[in-house]
Amino acid sequence: MSVTQPQATQPATGAFDRHPGYRRMFAPDRLTLGLFLPLWPYNGDPDGLRGHGEIVARADRGGLAGLWVRDIPLHDTRFGDVGQVYDPWTTLTWLAAHTDRIALAAGSVVATLRHPIDLAKQAASLDRLSGGRLVLGVASGDRASEFPAYGIGYDDRAARFAETLPLVRRLLTERFPRVDSELARMDGSTDLLPKPTVGTVPLIVTGSSRQTQEWIAAHSDGWLVYPGVTHTPEGPVALGQKIQGWRAHIPGGAFKPAITNEWIDLDEDPNHPPTPLRGGFVLRTGRNALIEQLGRWRDNGINHVALGVQHGRRPAADAVAEIVAEILPLFPSLNGPEPSAPAW
Image (cartoon, rainbow, N blue to C red; front, side, top):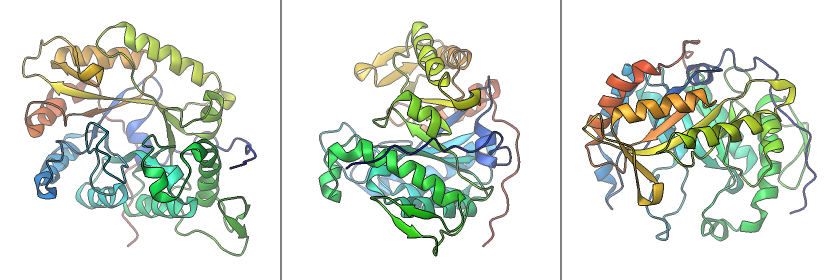
């Protein structure tokens, strides 16, 4: 796919001052906590995922900043886990109806497999129906088997992503846009409805998404970056240097949040040392070492950490309860505008 690189498009400073989801999660020099769903692995029976609702509701009442879902359209047995079973948009809509204040985040929608019009309409609709709580992570995709299933070339994903994200931004923010690209043609006589609650939706780029740091800094509202080494003090320092390099490219030096994630096996012993498992994919740790790690991430420029407990040995309800009771008070969610009542 031949694509002309569009000019940088990002909201003006303060564009998210009134966005409940963004303000709950992100602020300079602060770190908040989120939770990746599902909370335990798929066992071959969808009924085995029953029970998430009450745990999620308790996390919402307990003040957690965000809930994250993944976008994995197809089960590929070459990957170690099924990951997200239910469609992310359907799951986020269910979460919107069963929670009150917690931010709802996608980590991340595979933008290269979605048409920009559909992606923008789903995002704006969910943002409206949740009262402004959506934070939309987007990615170029890393499961090669999904692309031929969609009839899309795997090698085209870099160019397709670079064209999709600015177009989604335009569809969310402009009235009756004129578009002439390989993905869409609009002559100014049609518009996308609804528009988001406060004018736009935060768009968070995941990993490199096959783009340069300069591109991500210019076109995103934040960066979801993989954590690297997490069981040593040096790991957050290296991650912080990477974040600092990315932020040096942000136009005008505006604040844009940096996010990372970690799959943890939260040990019942609060003093259990951080121990990498499964080649570093999972970190077994007690809460005291986890608290130290979160503090190091904060001090090195990370603004939000999404924790996943699905690979832990303990019941998810117990692990989440400990996170909310013992760790969340040290990294509280941020005060911001209340979600608006959905206009429905």
